View (cartoon, rainbow, N blue to C red):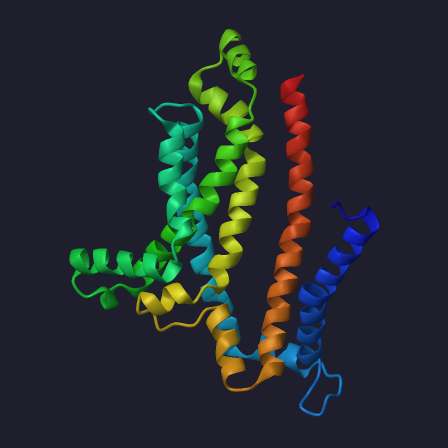
Length: 263
């Protein structure tokens, strides 16, 4: 029995209202109110005047930027090799990279921690380096998959045309393949950068005692300070919104470049 279109839309809207809109409203309510329930900007100003929150934001950005850069550096050649079928059974190799996503992240990080312990001895001596390694290991599949999907959608005739016109492999890569795979790169960067700013599980597992935005939010809520915790969450939501707005024009430029290359 098929549900009528309107009935399905109603179910979908109820789902969005209960699980997306309502939690967001609650977060914004606590972010812009005080203990008495009165509207205030104090929580907002406190965030940008508190050295602790600003230092945490800066450290989170550093962690996220380095993690994203390392993941992109590793993921693009991997996705390119698989998409160009430079190895036997590329589907099998792709499965090797994706399979860890099916395992609980705590178990995966525990295994990584044991490996690092065997190599480094006491991993507590290298908290920042091990955090980057843990973040990259945890999020690398999210960078590989969208890039791979973009690469396999490139029309092989475009590469043949570039070769026929005398383009070297380096020129074909820089002027054809990378521009056409840019949507996958943008998606991968977004999927890695934002979670890397807030995933404090990796820090805890790798003995990194420094807070990032996710752990700072948790510390406020654990101490029943819902107002400042919600304000930090609201700032992160604003950051995500800004990145999304910046991302949209880039996607339009990529589509325009793709049309130009196709022509």
